[in-house]
Length: 183
Image (cartoon, rainbow, N blue to C red; front, side, top):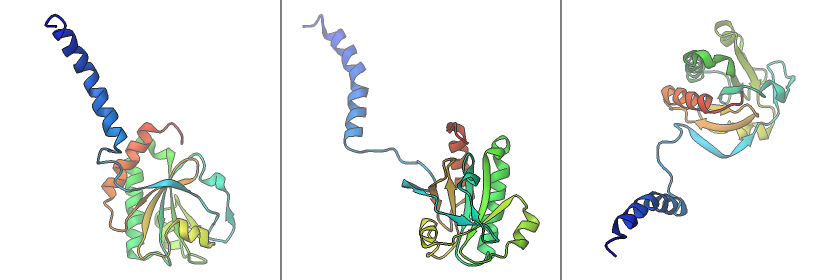
């Protein structure tokens, strides 16, 4: 038996990590420190939206790009403008990945007063939630403006609270763009 002791020790050391990993997986343990935002599981389908003039926005506008959407009920107040500026800073901080990301402001106000925003940020898209499905998808019934991340397939995958840290959004976007081939 003492002849096989080194062999058994080596085998135990090789099998032990797999056994521990399998056990942790079986009991549902997941490492902390995932996304800074709330991962929507399952992702929400993008409902039909309209542009500022009331014309439907084709789904193709969101296909092929990652999208940062600032969404909130009513006109763009001071908190909304801070998020619009923050998403612009996040967009610029992505540097070489900027062409893969677009930004939008979504409101349920018809017609939205987007002239002050577009005067300062002409690359910002305006969208209007015209249906109850769109209001529910972007939580427009809740107070405050939130930031949502849409994937290149047009699904809403991440949601950030009104008081989220923009640096967390930037870190999540950098991680998404680093590992995603799409968009």
